[in-house]
Length: 212
Image (cartoon, rainbow, N blue to C red; front, side, top):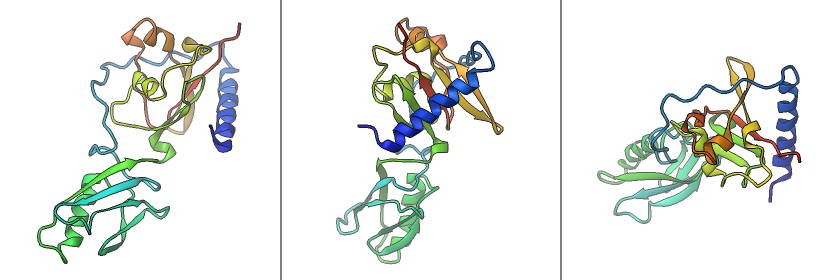
């Protein structure tokens, strides 16, 4: 079930889309990506940046007492056995693992640490938000090389009432908000790879309903 806050956000974004579209018959089509991504980086990728609310699994090789699972606090800090108030937000999992090794080396000989993100939240500026006629409307953490197809797979596809070729992406560039048309039906139902555009962090994908 969608939260009240998310429902309000959805309504606001749909109104925003209508407002942006008011000055022209149809938004311009988003330029096609020159090369579709062949792989999508996960939250444990060196490209992923830890944020408040993320759940981290800290594994210290050969020492179960030092291994733990922690949630990054709103202030961006974590506390693990023997290490208190360590900044985690803004670091990659690999960077944090190296920092923990340095801290633990005061107590343990040559510690080997692995940090993985088991649940991730991320900041809105690092997310792609999907509203409207998606099977599972939600916010998705942006991953390097993410394409429109990656986003649609993440939200479980479209509903039967989706007007896929009337979908739009709202994007802020240099402080200016611009709306682009994307062709979801062409991409998903017809396999038109030219419709697989590249997404950017902060994008909002709005999928309207078909009116019969």
